Image 1 (cartoon, rainbow, N blue to C red):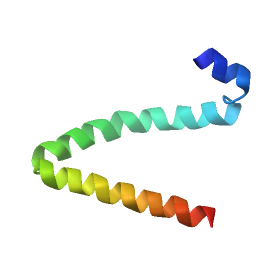
Image 2: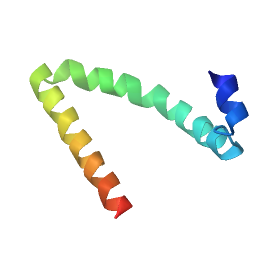
Image 3: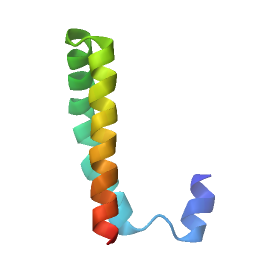
Image 4: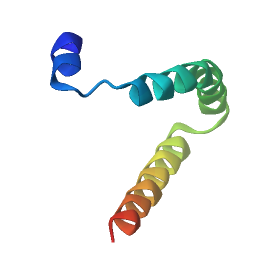
Length: 65
């Protein structure tokens, strides 16, 4: 799969740079998310996630207009 993406031109230097920036952030965000999810009721956590998905979807729609 990765080789076909590289051959198709989906993987560029810019993509690799963004990947390099995001991987260290994941090392912080994933444990933080696990910590938050243990302290918040599961229904509330799901509600927050859906709310964020709606906000991000609206931002993407706004950006395309």
